Image 1 (tube, rainbow, N blue to C red):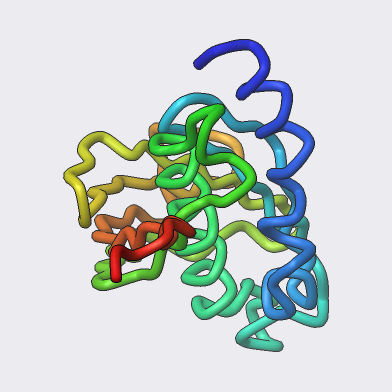
Image 2: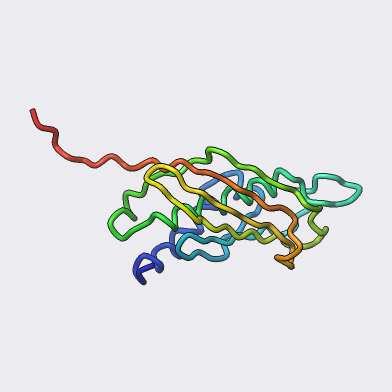
Length: 158
């Protein structure tokens, strides 16, 4: 990724959480971005506990974390200096999650996503959520995203 694009992505990427009410309400935080890759964290919070007896984070919070980090990975894969200010939109077409174990109560969950393939209209992403050991995931996901390209403001012939 060119240095200008990378610098700008680091400036804009926190808005991918702050600009989405659900992610903001859950407390999701931006951690890192690179070409086709992104990392977010979900600090433990008693407001997002799914089971009061076990104090485990609700699976819906993990789903949101994986979906949002995957979306940023797509954007970082397709962004260029030319389209940065008029960026294409991305929308989740399919998100499949394998929950492997509950997150440890009190621990921050970290999610990393890798957009490994893009076509003109579709992007493919894999992501992992873990609470400290990437080799012992809480959940993994596979997702496809639709890429909608911004319409160019060109005069049409009469």
